[in-house]
Length: 289
Image (cartoon, rainbow, N blue to C red):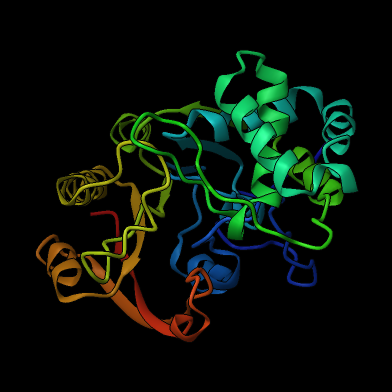
């Protein structure tokens, strides 16, 4: 499976080509905001994503090369396994998508196995299973690092074969790295572009649904991320960051000379349907200086 050569551009080269959906469900994923993000990104030699998540931006931009990083070893492990094995791994994953596997008892048994197994291939397949069968696609861990997203109770979870093949086809000239943002971002070089989708600053003290890997993401991490973005801009690297649009977040980026655009998005993660309304998000753009 070979991908077509990609132009060195941050925007989709073929306007008639439909956007590619990620094969993972990912709360806060950027599929619905692709146009905004693509318009903000400059053309460049390479795109770096320190918080790759579901890979929606990677899948729908046309850079010559990519560095996709995330602190979550399970996520990067799945991507590596898929890229290494392709169709053989997809076929292996299919066995977890059947009626017998779509029960509460099966889900919790597989979740326990996922947390205990040392078999890398099976762990990656189970990560996909848990993502598609768990509640709202949440990727949540307890304080000991155990995956603890509850069962989702879906009638027939979708097996994303087509989307997995698309990921493999787009993954040429792509490096996958399990690393924190402050390890991957310094790898940027002049002419690169960086898109950051970090765990968002909570809208309230109890809204911690964005802590998607063990250890969470603190305000100090938010400050460190903004500082690195500012440093990279001074080294001819464009950085674009997504976050909630709050006064604290705006001030964080404003004092570092970022261009800020706010907009409304619909939240669909809350367990309370009445709270699935619109919230304000922003894009902070640190242009090369």
